[in-house]
Image 1 (cartoon, rainbow, N blue to C red):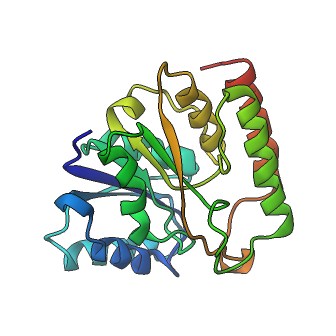
Image 2 (cartoon, rainbow, N blue to C red):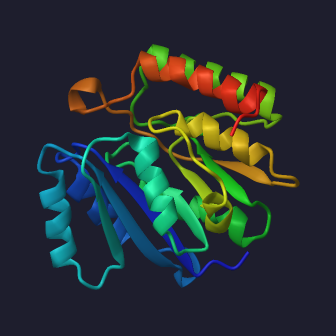
Length: 241
């Protein structure tokens, strides 16, 4: 597949501590084959200085292709991603959290299977990489493993990390899929719906991961894990839209 532009969707909600840092990291990344970057930032009703910091970045970087959208009220990560997908113009898109858990320098690792024609979708797996900088919470690690197993059971895929943020996806394909989940249920929903596409080729590549703590702004909790199980059953077992 020929890729000339990568749309990078960045959902932001109260990420004043890290949003400028991640935007600078994304800006610094040089994509292989001179692929252009399109930054799509969606502020999901932040109540801190996130919006101000994003706007400052916009003013200081007029040469960077950036689209900035706002939700008047907080709707959830899935809703922000849906907004970003609808505005994407690159052949492929990737989701980038506004914290520092995932490293933008690894975009090229995910692009390679697409550019070689070996895959249509690429997931970055935290569990294929044995050199994580910081260990995840015990319950979080095992919950991810269980949710991935449950997702695979109904999707027929052989993933090691269904819940990963780094999903490199075909934009046209994603814009044809209706996203229903507003929060973290996006991950199992989109995995289930992708798995239904006839002939879809999905690969995983190892990525690094530096888990942050709840006192550093981590938002996902046990309720999101319960919702993820519900979503796996809803979109995987019962194949609801």
